[in-house]
Length: 495
Image (cartoon, rainbow, N blue to C red; front, side, top):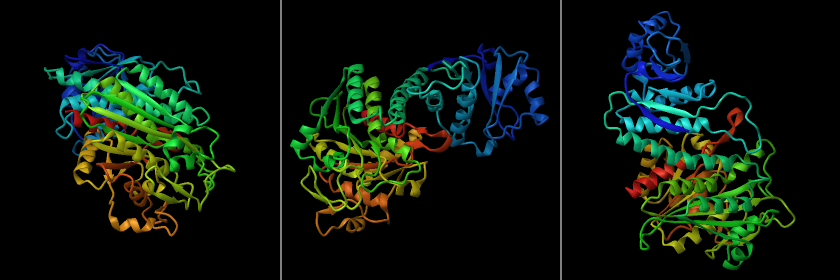
């Protein structure tokens, strides 16, 4: 989508549709007051009669208002003024964009960023609005045609009001473009069906990404190389899949040769049947989203390619299928990981941690400044946190604070779960160095404890995105999270 800034009084903005806020319990103010005066009180009259109550999420379209150059005025209910905060600003902006996407307009302008939002500066408000616009504009079209012939919104302008210095606003729009480019790629890869989005397909997509962005290099490791290096946990999971595994390694060098890189490791199970420990049938189709951790790494590298920061970044995606087959790994098998540690398999549906543990060991060779693994790892995390926050685990308090702060700034929030040594005993095994599951209790945490055993030699954090990577039901689809959180984290590191 094309974004721009527009100055001047809102009634003088020439556009097919102008978006303005209306509160449920407050007289018109700001831009709405100017629009009301220009239209000789038409708006306030409608509010007084109850035709525009301003309930949160409600939208109303007015046409042909006198004194206003916009062809249409889209009024968005903001709820009660006293309840208005960052979350409600995002909700109102989302409702406005959804309504715009259903209207026959190719261009619009929005006054919503002119609202005071919890002390947030105009640049933050415009960046949020632009990112939400891109999220609402996303359409999956790889295997299905659009369901209606309504013209797609192509251009969106933001009214700057009294802001005179537009440099920070231009930077905010560029920031939004960078994040949205990565988020869109992550959503596309997540939404693709598993018969298309195989490990080999992801490898080819990685090559295309590197071709788009000359500063990004990619290396693809295949079966023979993985077997020779001793990636026994990863290869154990891959045994039952007809599609061959890949280890995809992105390298971006924006800093000096001596700068230690930020390393991202993303779980790339392109379809998870559960293996021999077969999953129940209902909603199994959604297991195509089990590669969203890997898709997140793709998205972040896409953003990095556009942004070109002065830091070094490495992205690692172990990509496999987890399928039942005569050659599949079984409960009771013992796998030897790349680190040399042995793992007793108690459940083949706990496969993500097995491919991640080898990738975490592989990450050591880059002498990382920090490693973050991202994975749709456990249903237990969904039960604990729902679909609002990603689960964060790390033994490093300062690292947790950095990631939580990036989540708050980007509104792609995480919540820290404990990673106490007390939980480690649940992974005890009589036949190997550890078991791959720790029982029903604290399932998300014991999964993090398992991964921690392979990340002792560097600064490490784990993001469980099982609840945030995609939506279910009528709105089923990938969300592109936690790309905003991770790009913001990298931006904070890059200064």
